[in-house]
Image (cartoon, rainbow, N blue to C red):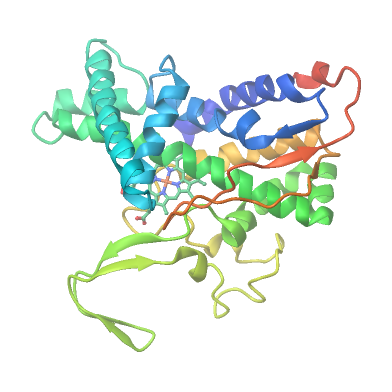
Length: 311
Ligand code: HEM
């Protein structure tokens, strides 16, 4: 819930600034490797209640889950990804056991452990273990990619980038339009519970459906001139980048908060950043979309790292 998530804002801002400190004097960066690879994962671990887990291991194992379930690995890579998925499952079990030893376990997993103590039949260990895996996987790669896509969009629309540098109060609307215009989960799965007609085509009961979210977000019946990037459009929150219905993204408030803080700190500390000339590479994948590298440069100011304290 927002009131629990908002408590993470200080941690998100401090962690973001600690990472920016490392490269702000350099004049160039790959924002994936230097910032967005680690920070959403560190936030996810804090949210789950296991901040001491090794971020590199967690990221590597979580990425094998996305590669195995949504990617197009070669046969050899598939074996490696399956091995990583198994290790990820084992890690989830170890984390649950560790947290269960605490009287007052922290974070979201701690919350579900407390529910398990009240209703053991409803929340078996396998449910908690799945939540560690699902929560870690769902929380960070999605946000890494969404922020990277947002930065590419904004730096290509320089006027919008400069507008949020001048007036950070515009950032929440910009985040919403970035999620609509260039979100990170481009397609998601459903199963038809009954025969249903969509756009003149009958989808039979039981059919597996790949819903192309990115296409729905460009539906000209909902959004005027959908291809244009326009943070001032009145209905930009009508996108379905976080899904729809009872299973709508549990982390949408956290993701929005993270994206807002990333943009607030990057516009404050690196307003002159520009995209390097580069061809973006995307992993072959049905659902998760974001560049593997995001190279930027700027004219470094002497002592810029001193500016890390929160404004
Ligand atoms: C910009 C970042 C994110 C995007 C684009 C995104 C997108 C999505 C989408 C499309 C779904 C499927 C929803 C549906 O079936 O209707 C989903 C589910 C989910 N997301 Fe996210 N997500 C993001 C960040 C996060 C974060 C930060 C967390 C963790 C706190 C999270 C946790 C989850 C969980 C647990 C589910 C499964 C919910 C359920 O099945 O009931 N997500 N997300």
